[in-house]
Every structure is written in C-alpha cells, then in structure tokens.
Figure 1 (cartoon, rainbow, N blue to C red):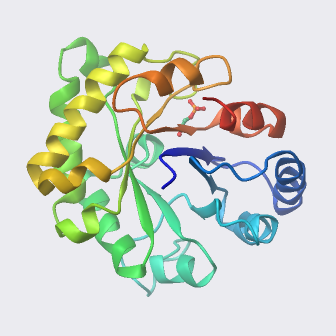
Figure 2: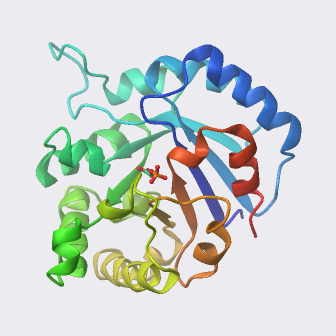
Length: 250
Ligand code: PGA
C-alpha cells in the first residue's frame, strides 16, 4: 500500500493549457513510485486537462478545491459533489483556511461539505489549522480538535477511515514560514489521538498531511516527523520542476 501522499493545491492558478503542459513535463519525468500517491487539486475549469494528463496513471489522482454542501439547485457560481464526481474528480479539499478565512466558511458548513463529499463518492481532504493569534494564545490543539470534531460530526466510522486530514497552520500558508518538524509532529500526534477517540484503532490508517510553505528544501525533514504522512503544497506545486523535486523526497 502506498503510504505517502503528495498533494498539489494549485488554488486559482493554471489554466487548462498550463495544466496540460505541466502534466506532460511531470509524467515524462516521474515514473510510478510504489510507496506514494500524488494528488492534484487544479481549479475546476482545469480538472479535465489534469485528468487527461494523468490517464493511464493510477498513482496520479485529481480532485476539486471546494464543493457546495447541496447536491444541486439554484446556487449560482457553486459546484456540487455530484457535478465534480461526474466531471471525473475523485477528491475534494474541504475547509481549506482560505475558504474559512477569506470566504467566511464556518465549522458547520465544513461539516456539511464533508458529508456531501462522501455522499458523492469523493474523498475529502479535511483541512484544519490555527491562526497566529490562536497559536500565540496557546490554543493550537484546542482549535484543531474543535475543527476536526465539527468537520467529521456527520460522518460514520466506515467513511471516516477513508478520509485524508491536512494540518495547515494558517500563519504558515503562503508566508514562507513553516512549522518546525517538532511543532508539526506535536499537532499531528494530537490529531491522531482525536481521530482514535472518534473512530478507534481504525483511525491509524487515516493519512495526516502537513501543509504551509512546504518546498523542496524542507519537505524531507517534515516527512521524517512522527505522524506526518505526506504534504499538501500550494506555491511550490505550481512549477513542474520544483514539484518533481518534492514528490521524489524520501
Ligand atoms: P503554500 O499553500 O504551500 O503556498 O503555503 C499550502 C496550502 O494552502 O494548501
């Protein structure tokens, strides 16, 4: 079983032609590795180009960056789980800090989106993380546990054990500041404990990714930290050469 996950969050970057060119460069130079999976989260309009680029490669998967919690209806500008699934997505990011802090998404809405993702057959990557003020106030673990509980509240254990969790401290996203491996590890250990409290021993299989200014220089030490099962990468995933260096990390 592959045990490492490398996820690229392209945010609002990479038009279809850029995505196609990226995947050509990437797949040419990246043969399948037995011990890892690579996930791409392009903008929804570029999902098709990514899927074309990764066809015939079951080690390379793709998803969308957000869904609405309703399956269909009058929600102008939104994409539902069933629509994303029908377009070929296998994964969805839920509760990314930019959704929470730029778009005001609440814990409750995040929970509804996780339920909607499973209903549609998508694997949610559930993102949690504290702000700088919360970290400085010593609230990191409490905040992350609260976000996790809320996000997973409506999910049964059988589904939960197929989810992916991402710990992304808000102060580390796009800032060039990373948590030290020890800091990341301490939070990942707390997340694992919380997952065990919810799902019992089966929670051991849930991957917990670290995200926040991961790059080719810091990825190896982060992956070496206890309970870090992979990385969720924004800025450094936009350049194919840099992304190649990251996914080859050991
Ligand atoms: P970053 O973004 O790697 O650019 O910090 C990570 C993320 O937001 O998922």
